[in-house]
Image 1 (cartoon, helix red, strand yellow):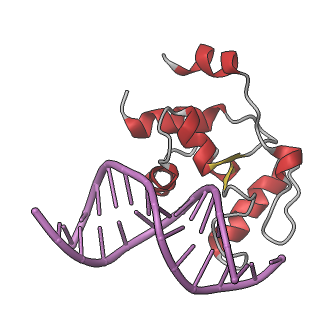
Image 2 (cartoon, rainbow, N blue to C red):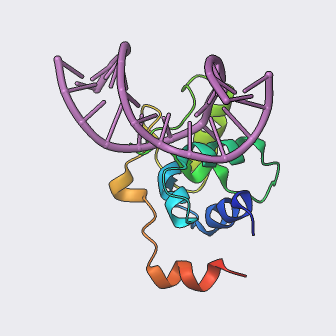
Length: 110
DNA sequence: CTTTTGACTACGG
DNA sequence: TCCGTAGCCAAAA
């Protein structure tokens, strides 16, 4: 499985109503320090079943300007699953995904 | 081969 | 809290 595939697999494991940071996704995909790669993969992905909106920066902010179309879109999709967005940011203490080790190990390598 | 380029992050001031 | 800076590293130029 190549790197983009691993990243996509991890993103698809993020539960509805939860979020993860770029760096967190990279780590879980076995690619430490590759947060920027996660961004690149999401940018290029066209998979409509990919919950890309659940991936945020390390501090909980959306990676787009609040007024941008992409930003509005991401906010809307987050709101749609009950995630509150204030000032282009979500409360990570409340929404950040905290997968158990087994949760990852069991579902990842297919 | 060197430089630029990022849906990033950590650290200061 | 809000910037600038430095570090990051694979891809593309």
